[in-house]
Amino acid sequence: MLATLGDWVDTALSTVSPTKEEKARVDSVARDLLQRCSYAIEKSGIRAKVELGGSYAHNTWLPGEADVDAFIILPEGTSKEEVPKIGLKIANEALSGLHVIKRFAEHPYLESYIDKVRVDVVPCIEAKKGEWKTAADRSPYHTRYMLSSLNDEKKRQIRLLKRFMKAQNLYGAEIKIKGFSGYVCEVLIAKYNTFLDLVQQAAEWKDGTIITVQKIQEGKNEGIAILDPVDERRNLARAISNQKMAEFIHLCRIVQNRKIENPFEKRLLRYAKLTKGILEHAFVLAFEHKEENEDILWGELNRTSKNIAKHLTLDGFEVLNHNAYADNQKAAIAFLIANANRSDIIARNGPPIFYSKEHKRFLSSASISWVFTDDFRTKRLERRKIISLKQILDEYMTNNRAGIAKGLFQSASSTWKLFSGNEAVKSGKELLVKALEAVAGYEPMDSY
Image 1 (cartoon, rainbow, N blue to C red):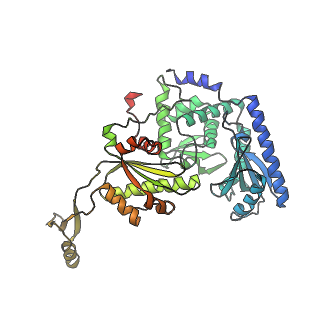
Image 2: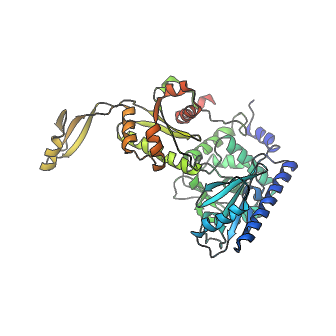
Image 3: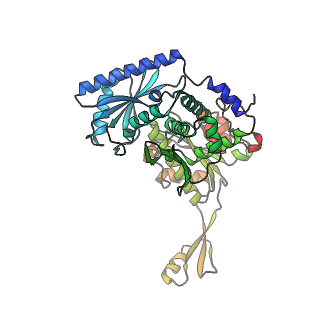
């Protein structure tokens, strides 16, 4: 069914707020978590306190997706180095008896579940405004700011924006996604008041636009800046990849003046079909990885994907696009490459003729022939030993010349396999196909 964005907004607004029953259940979890944290603080003997934060405290969470954040606020004199040790000891006591997962941001924090609701216990330090020692120190200020700035209608609009971001795969500040955090969504609605006004304005954002809750201005920065209203030295958009920001601006443009499918439930940008023209230039490097924290794993994967693509290009393989994907045990890095095999001949430019010793040494390495060039230099022709993509990847996996992340190299070097695009599709393996879809890009605009 096709309808205008305004029609879909009217439909979605009635579904984005939790029911009284769900809210009562999550409220019970929040009280339980507060009691656990208060008891753990008292038992520790440390002069700390606990405050709730995040989407639960701001009352901007979506139905079925509640999570409760508790911040253990350590005394003002606590050093940054003491936070993991002292804070995690209290957090572990607070979550005693529950299955606990250690997560990492600037410093580690703990995650668990109470009555099927995710709870996070995050240490931070009591700090005067602007004198933060860790990023988490701002969080209590974020909560106080949003509680004083958001009315019930703005909270509904934030939920609407979050639903849109989730449906369009733009939501989440974690490194796996590099998208829009819940707090960024709150700041944008605090600025623009409604989802529809945000869409209209974001469609016109320019390079160098600086967004603050108080005003909007042009600056010398590259890309878009979204300043934290609690600390305007902090650009919230730095955690958003340029690709995700560009996707959001593009989506704002295409939803405004046409009838569309429901953008709060269905992704509007569709992956291009894996046709012969794409598959013959697509390759997937698959390998096993050790169990690792998701943020660390995706950081290593993204860095490895970028480094391999860079070295392939330097080594004569023109990389058109690259993308990483992973599940609990295996990873896949997909590449679109213009040339699966490079020429077996390469030209090397030499020093000027006036440098006698260097010139002689350069010519002695010519394996085929050499020529004079117009700029008093020489060029020699050499025969390459490695001409196929598989051969060059074998070299990378042997000596790690391409800068594969240390955390991945050992397992990757012993388990890697290279699949052509067709082989990846025929395998039927979800991991390989998802990597291929992402690297293939989106369908042409006339298909929307």
